[in-house]
Length: 138
Image (cartoon, rainbow, N blue to C red; front, side, top):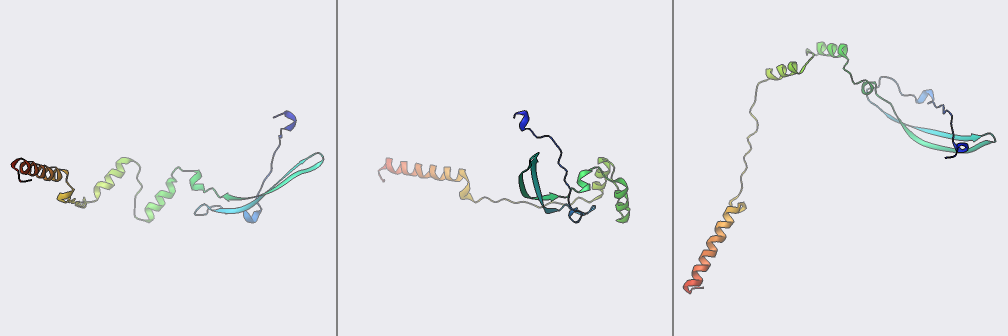
């Protein structure tokens, strides 16, 4: 692109105060907004476009994935639970639960769905057919 056709500059953008998402919402939300772009040069306006977009409110929980230790400890205390600090703590908790037998899975295959059945049946029929032919009965 030739230097005289390049654009360098800044674009200032902001949402109206009534459209700014509230901080601390429990889940991220999408809300519609319209973006108007106006291009101008020294002689005046060159072009204008209006674009509909959806703005995603970034959840603070997703922006900072590190655990909030004080919050977790408070939650554990309120629910009579405990905070697990390591894999060994988790293993100890899992060992406290009694072992229960799982489901018993029984798989039945009908005789006619077995290859050996068909090989033996066809083999016996072939032997019977051959013996009848050789003895003159077939």
